[in-house]
Image (tube, rainbow, N blue to C red; front, side, top):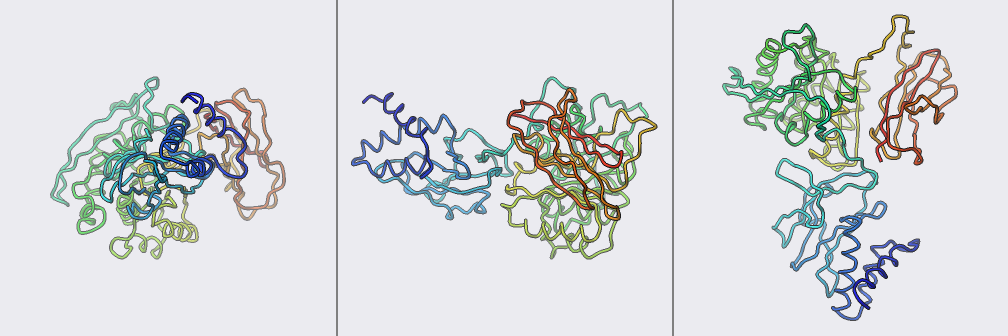
Length: 490
């Protein structure tokens, strides 16, 4: 039998019903049953040809099969899922072949970074996986499970208006050092105009630009009318650990509020109220963002935490917020379940909610990485500075206090998304309807149509028959209605 016939036979075998075993296990059992290395090598070659057409790691439902083909003494998989431990997930070699594998189970919407470690010390990207994600220590291979939706907003779109980026240097007397800063200005920004803008201050600013593609994110969100026009301030630290967490944290905090903010306000058209300033950061950058906003809530009324690492100085920032007086600060906290701090972030979330803070939180099956942070910048910006309505009429009925319709998640989606809405306490039972419409205004689904008591509710929307495009979902209650858009991306 020639190679083509063997391949066709193999693909046919893998296309039949697999109720008893999955395809990968069938392959492993098949190779183990073969009598000699020659037939085993032919089976491996056929499988690799097939697997490369569908993607490696070879994913079946919630199973991810990592594969390496080569002559090594041993090889392991290290990544977000095992704290990058090179000895945790050793791969198994198929006897009589060069084929190594490791099978692991993940959530269907998980996204994780990993590398292979050959012979205990040689860290490499997965040679069979072209998908990578930038990390703080270079590129990593990316595992994205079937229901993970890649962040469209990080990609550069040549067909839309783009903001401009200026580079400045600012000397700080508080830290006795010079800082490099990139400033994003929205399209059509005019320094002579009377129009002013909210400001977003990014810790690890150059990484947010280079690794998280924040400029693309802002451009795309503005073009999609998802956020207000904002000015972005991206600050590059000089001694990250000391400035964000340890010996220089207080000097850096004072540089931020007493030198950087006044400088930005003096040069650019900013809105100077605290509720129009956001400071955000990742990991230790979240720690210093929390310290800055809590100690200076009159300057920063918004705080964004990407996997906020609060452990420095015996959880100084964490304890200030959880045990101290309530400040006028709005929070957004996002973290992954494959990072060790996720239990602390859950407790932090519960503490903030119990103290009455306004908080948006998102927990995802991801790790402590730029892959998570780059894909959720939009969540923060849309939460803190949502687009202003362009068609408000003077006689529009005011929103009943406490009724809220939130942005669906994930968005874009394929094929499932969740819509959240809230009914405030202190109200009687209300007749609620949530409906979905296409871009022509035709009703395509009624998700809710019943009496609802006070509380926060989630409803799932899924329709595999719909084509890619923009859809709208509408909340109606007591004569008040609110509509938001969502994107189906297949």
